[in-house]
Image (cartoon, rainbow, N blue to C red; front, side):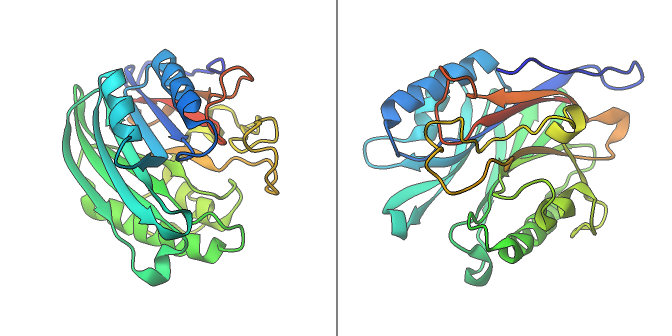
Length: 274
């Protein structure tokens, strides 16, 4: 795990929640060895909440269930059948705190693209309600316009479920770099799709001078891909909560060391005021 960079101000909430997000690459490659590594890395990182993407399930194995049971977490998963891959895969939220509410958002065909999945869990955390949204956007580089529509629907969905006083976290594989239109919509660098809903990008807030690639040619599982190195996996938290709740204080990569790689993506962790 990368060394943390932290900030602290006496007037702000001093306690934090550690959040992790990781695209775990379905059942591709040597998946049994990979999932053992993913479990080990997550255990060492000790997050309070984990968001997984490409978590797969079949009659003999359920990635989210296995990881949650091993780590001792509650879990909720949104799994869909992807016909081109002949694979049941989706998103999962794992939490050391009880999941009090869970939902998913089913997009209409014109906005779903090649496989967007959106998931929501409301957690009964020890310092108030924590609302966690987990997203997997369309992957194709030529479909930014589709991802922008997906972000619009996602933000409207979040705004409808927002509870006064709750901390809001949005994680996932957005398949878009920080300067893309779809990410700028989330971070307030262009017009937000839902009035009053703007997010911190944890990596940019804490490590603005570091690239933080989560898709990288240094990863043996990704080096054959035509995609350039980029940061496409994010931990966002809603801006503007009282006492700085949601403000990032530290962040780093997961599974990025040569002997700790568990997926074709590197994961991200962040500590958020909570």
